[in-house]
Image (cartoon, rainbow, N blue to C red; front, side, top):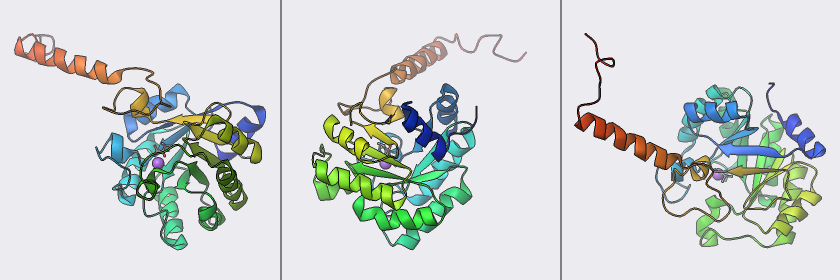
Length: 262
Ligand code: KIV
Ligand code: NA
């Protein structure tokens, strides 16, 4: 199978073939997701929450993103790999963001970056795309904006959402990712742009879906949002395996003779 590119995704939207995207932060998981045929892997700054144990994405650094992007980029043979610009690297001066995007392309085997924001990020998107760095725009709920918003909330302002999507497209974004908006808003955005739209908590009327892998595998404890689905409880499987290991060691039934050297 050949590599998924910006052009592949555009063709998929035109054909009505739905795009699949999941987060990945490490080599073995990325390899499994790639082999499963996931179209796009996202090295998301959610790594700060689901791997590092923070309560927001804000503490994640650019160096940490590069560290995870290296592992995922090395694993993916088919999927396109997109890397989040963390806070505040996607908000400081344009040249700084271009440099960070360039680091992603030079230091990792990943292919694009994701930036939170629409209209207010148009100039930055244009500068980055102009420099040869493909940009996925992330509109609707923007987790890096949590302290301005006062929490993670459904975004209902359809006019603003459509304007953000159009501005991102005009600036050269290759995909508009839409987080946590009513289905009708996501449908309106998708109708208003010709690039693919990828939704999370945005209903079905979009070009594709993205979820946080740890959420769908039961590897996140506590609160999970309404828009996610548990596809397999890998967390429970790991817990059972660890318990069995402990039991066998305590009972001296591990290791067996076959698992030992003479
Ligand atoms: O960081 C991330 O995982 C994301 C997804 C929630 C889209 O940005
Ligand atoms: Na993110």
